[in-house]
Structures are given as C-alpha cells and as structure tokens.
Length: 287
Image (tube, rainbow, N blue to C red; front, side, top):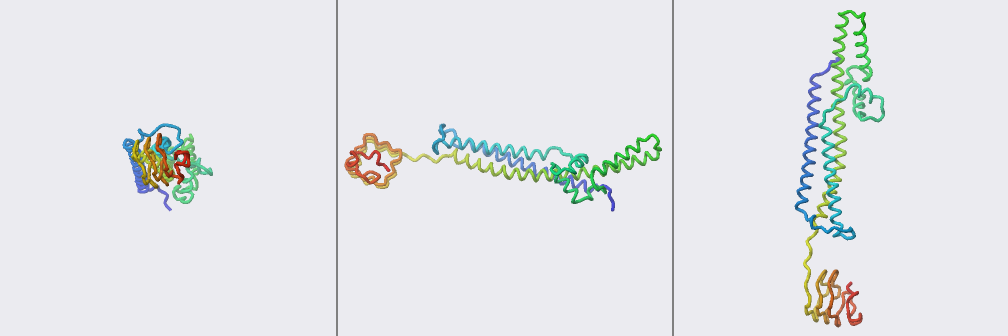
C-alpha cells in the first residue's frame, strides 16, 4: 500500500476548512443581525415610559424584566459571535500536539485522536504519532554523525524530507478534524445561546411594550340615580361626588375607582349588600 502524501487530499481538506469557516461567517452575521434587531426594537418600544420602582406589581416589574431580557439577549449574541469567531482564527495542530493528546483520556484533541485511531491510514504508515517523530529524530541523528558519508547524508536528507511531507499530511488532517470538532462544539453552544436569546427577546418584548391603558370613566358629580350598573366595568373610574341613589352596582368592578363624596342611598353595592345596611356607604363592599 502506498503511503505517499496525497496532494489532492490536501486540497480537499483546504476546501473543507473553507466551507467550515464560511459557515462560521454566516453564524457571526446572523448573530450580529439579531443584536442589531434588538437594538432597533428597543427604540420602538415604550421602555423609557416604564415606571422605576420596587418590582412588587406587574407594572413596576416590567422595567426590570425588560432590562434583564435585554442583557440576556445581547449577552448571548456577543457570546455567539465570540464562539463563531474562534473558528475563523488560524488553527494548526502539530504532530507533537497530536502525540501529546494520544495517550490522554480527556483532551481538547480527543475527537482528532479518535479519528486517527479509527482511520490509521492517515498516520502515513505509522501506528502512532510518536513513531514518526522517533523515526525523524533517528534520521537526523544519523545525518549528524561525523562518520556518515556524504552520499549517505544525501539519502538521509531525502528520507527526512519525505517524512516531513508525511508529517505535514498528518498535521493537515489533524487540523481539519480539530476544526470540525470545534465547529460541532460551537453549534451545541450556539443552540443553547439561541434558546437563552429567544427567552430574553420575548421577555424584553413583553416587558417593554405594555398594553395601552384603558380609558378611565370620568363620572365626577354625575347624577346616576336609579342607574342599572350591574357587572359594569368601572375600573379606575372617577366617581367623586356622584349621586348613586337607588343605583344597582351588583357585580360591578370598581378596582382603583375614586369614590370620595359619593352619595350612597339605597344603593346595591358590588358585593350585593345595601348601602343603607352598611352605614350608608359601599366603601369596603366593592367586591
């Protein structure tokens, strides 16, 4: 079996590396687009109008949720870009690096070592990286012997050059496999980062865009004698000094309503009791 380095194989590895790096460039561009969309969306939101305070209600918690969502979203975008950029950086796995990782159980080059163990043909006729390193060192030692004849030196130099080509082929394969392994790890990290970014974006969108405030009914000083207001939506209504004589408010929602100076006479309160039985008021009986 021939063990000569395959130039066509080297070209194939380079093309494979280029495709992996092109995919990484798309990941960087996609993450940057998400970050730009979040920044643009923040300008269209109502985050500047959110109240600042202790998050003890939905309204006061919105600002905190929006900030946390934005931080989570933008942080994961930066992390995604940083992870993808690592793939674009120059990478070279030397045969000495492969030899160092060869006997280790856990190593950054674990996937690369496993690839060579499954496919020993890529070791260029040697059983382990240490063998080709030792073979080269022996040839160099022999070449440096003072007693070595010139024609033998020439032959040894040719053998060393041949080994160097084989080592280069091993290193090219190792670099390609390391890049593939790094890309797979990056994809797993980016999948998790995408999930976190999605949660952050949704949280930011919900918190920074509160629903429009419902219009408040202004019934101050209104004459509502005998009014039928069963199950009426009077949330945050202004009922100051209104006359609710004989009015029926059974089931009405007066959450947040202002009732200063209201006239309560024979008024059916929201809880179904009569104001006359409640010391002529519905205060305390609004639900």
